[in-house]
Image (tube, rainbow, N blue to C red; front, side):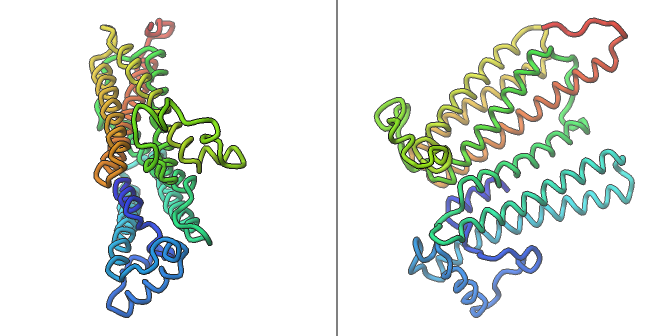
Length: 338
């Protein structure tokens, strides 16, 4: 779903459907008259008038199908989740606590859909040719929050395995740090995507001929705080700096997990996590230097989701093993040392 959303953005398809009809919107235009009516609605949008004037019906159908497919997959995810929860509740396959947790996850999923329309609506305002970067980032962030809850629930069910022994609080704190930096870096990437900052400053390691653009370029927009979301120079620089920080943290975490007293599974996850982040950084550089071709852009977005999944699973498994040790430890027994 996240990758298809990225393709919808990179192909400029996200504003091709100008209405939000949660139920009837599942039916695409049927026949020439229906297509002509849908195309007429799009021709009234600012994106068409300012960016795509003169577009043919065939070109419109190309972007329409991308956005329609994105929305249909969203509907399918919602239906599968709702039907699965209903079936599990009726057949008592989940406890009350589990059912409430899943219901809360469903509310998060529904909120994500609503944010998607708020995002699209921002791009239909006068003078806009794309959605607002902050709302695109919010849409992406909520999608990944829901995705993270799925990974956490799988860990709770024991589907991701279990560590044989608990790690100390230092390693767990490091795992949380890598997870927080990973999620934050994805949000910075959302701002890059929303502001199309990846199509500028397409060199590495230098940026605009130096380590960073000039202060005047970084804070050219007034008020100053808008530079963090709308100024392509500062938005891209922040994404680069976030990548360096995440890479350093992941490597430090992997090195700290190499001690012989750390469970083997935890060591393996730390190495995989660091390796994935190194690969993701290299892919990001390739995407930037190649000026964001669709294939590399989607691969970079997919890689970000994989990194997040491993980081969430790692935190969940380390926390589970620590709780299990506390529950089974004799009263007054010493806790695991760093």
